[in-house]
Amino acid sequence: MDSSQAVFEGLKKARIDFVVSLPCVNLCMLLEMVECDQEIIHVPVTREEEGFGIAAGAYLGGKKPAILMQNSGLGNSVNVLASLYKLYQLPILMVMSHRGTEGEFMSAQVPMGQATPGVLDALEIAYLNPKTPEEALKIIPEAWILAETAGSPLGILLDITFW
Amino acid sequence: MERIEAIKKIADELTDQLVICNIGYPSRELYHVKDSPTHFYMLGSMGMASSIGLGLAMAQKRKVIVFDGDGSLLMNLGSLVTIYSQNPKNLILVIIDNECYGSTGSQCTYASTVNLKKVAKAVGFNKSYYFNDNIDFKPILESEGPVFVHVKVSPGNADVPVIPLEPEEIKERFKREIERK
Image (cartoon, rainbow over all chains, first blue to last red; front, side, top):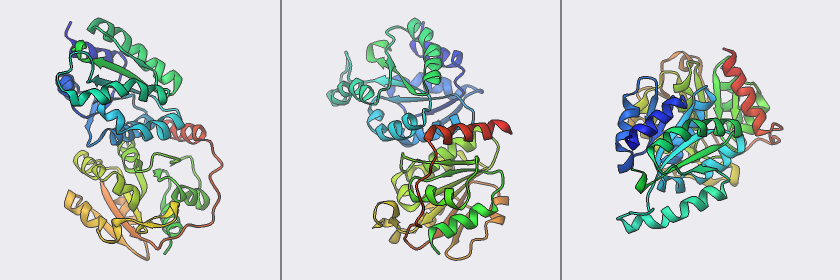
């Protein structure tokens, strides 16, 4: 099964209907699928923090939101995650291309790649790390239920080897 | 005109529109002059008011008014670009501009040298209004969005207490209010 297709179908099964995004080369196909889907409102944003703000408003308005981003954007979003999402107990699925993991060709990606799990831990944001498309398809719908029940963001970290 | 007067004049015109209100004194002042389940008071995430408003406007049909400030808009200037590009018909962005970070001791912002309405016009907003004394909000409520409203006020915060609502309470009653209609 194709990795992008698996994540997309996982999001559809989770009934995600509002997606904000910033690109990563690994999210290229997935972004196209989301853009073409008639049932999903897709909002490309200028910065991840802004995307979290927009998604929070969409959730208040009745939507099920997700963000598609590179893990580098987590660093741009720490305060909005703590003082909007954690404070008001808002759910969102954070689908992150996790750069700087095994197989990374660009050394510049390594520091933030290594810091990513620790930043999520510090924010008390749980994350899942599916290794195969089949696993992603299975856990993404469950991940949304977990996020909604807990009233918290939930991370889906997708390593370089996942793609 | 001080910020609390500007907030009161606009809030007095509102009925069932949804409101996203900026962190700090703006939320405290709005709560003080008029509280409603249609209000979402921000207690953190400075800079995010216009973004939350955009997401809310795109997710449902009711009109959304955002009370933002000059400092917080400058913190998330990219938001203007996204709002203009998404073109939400039901969004009114009100920038209450006191040319300073009012909640932290009135340190100056660059809004004293940069005209924020001109910035919005340069981005593409073709409906923009400017007020520095009397605010006539009725025609703005009737016009199609996105609308940019620039209100110059003098620095200073009203002597009003913190909002006695828990974040969870603010969220739940706001969500219920939206689901009700």
